[in-house]
Image (cartoon, rainbow, N blue to C red; front, side, top):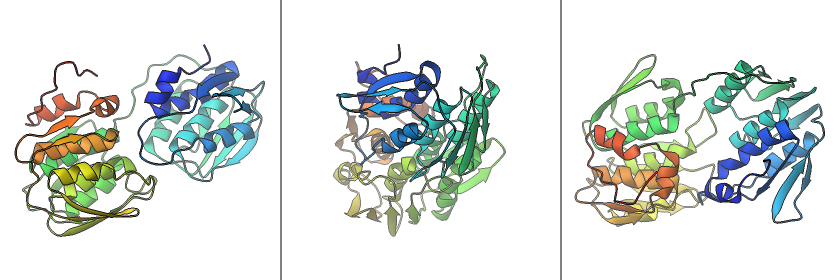
Length: 341
């Protein structure tokens, strides 16, 4: 089977990354245009332009995108933007064969490094992951391996931010502090006490929180996936905070739901101006996307009264047992009957 099921493409945009692996192994694939969270324009043109540079023929004249390739060719690809998904797709498409591929302006996120380490363990030759230039030398075949995937830095940031907003304390084990260093530094600016160890992070929040300013950027900058959660945290920080979203233009949809809970947020283009309040209050709200939905859960934990978050399928798609993990920290979250992962 070389086609990516349409139902997966509609639900999870990152399903498109399977395309590179299918092309590398079978020389072809077919998929529909991806759906997923509506957080702004997320075209896959960088993926397709990169595929074409590799010698892959692309047919977009039907409702699906059909990709075919007899042989990946040696080439140099200059990405217009350091896209994580495009970088991953191009690496996967290039690992098998007799060629050399160079990706310039590649994404440098830890997930790129982890993918390269996994592939190299299997026998691939991927050099430079973690820098903006990645070189791939094709190999004849890959071998089976056992591999432990890196800790989820966005989940780690979510748990730390939820604790900070609820004025609690947490020790998070089996985490890479370097991966979430922008969040930790900003939390320290806001008044949280943080201790960093080799594979652990401890945070304590006493409720005396001050506002700050953040700007999302590609890694190693502040991650866009944690912007909604940090913005939510800032709603109860004293003073005025400013958030600038430089990656996705529709990532502020969740703020309309936060206003139902008493947050004071004004959106001006890609900038959010937040005036801290003493406390949010419970309300009925709806998830607008994965991270926005998680931010509403976090807001509900810290709010006075009961909060009901609807359309949680967005949240469950991106977190594993988030409610149980937060409850283990002292939250009181009840998943309604019939709502499953």
